[in-house]
Length: 368
Image (cartoon, rainbow, N blue to C red; front, side):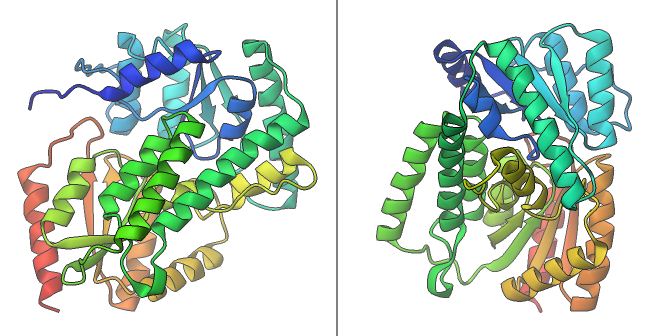
């Protein structure tokens, strides 16, 4: 398959010239508001920002393909435009990536935001302290300080994004959303790359035009929910839809998991950010209460009443494998059919094997 030009690279080079730099990050637990407040442009590192093919083998195979792809990109210089990179306290693959980065690469410099893996009042206070430390580090990097009022203004911009995305995902009067599921995930992904003011304007325009046009007629299709980590393979999502399914909901990093809850603007802003980022929704990388997680999942599946659920998982992504196994048991009890697709991050094309499995799964749902 011939590589297609990636417009993200050109866009980010233009952004770099207009800001104090680009600050890359890897997790939904990294507060974008802090990065923006010090004058950096927050960039969710997803991959494929250049068209060159890079397949470095510096990371051993059990590390997920996302980590391998990102390290190969960093080795090749494809991330040379980034001023710094912020790692989370997350999965083993990202920890290996962080260690290899520190051992083998000098630029861009990296920082680690130690977010807790338990969620309670003590962890919120601890995380607030860690966010404050990160803010001080980034201030030194950019040379730009900010007041609480300026931070609140940045928070409000990101709250606006979350509110608009929640409306775009909503189903008024029980009708399907006016955007296809693949388009909604693509739109959320764009927001992880774009300038916030420009992005909010686009969201508002889409919202206005979409509400005027009304919902698309997709009732005859099988109603599917997709679950997984970051899913940047839009061709795979479009293939699911082309096979006769409608993606009516998702629980993916660059989908609904990105915009849950707002940051409260009253009180201590750092503690408010800590609460929002830790409590915006259950994640396989956070040790939430097992019973609460199960109740939340059962309630969502019951409310959605999908014909089936498709798990899309990066190969060797251990937290999401465990999540799949736990959720599969629940779905069996609820008599909801599920399919697991295990994919490689740097392969955009949908394999013949996966295409056959998707077609068979959706056809089976139609027989129920």
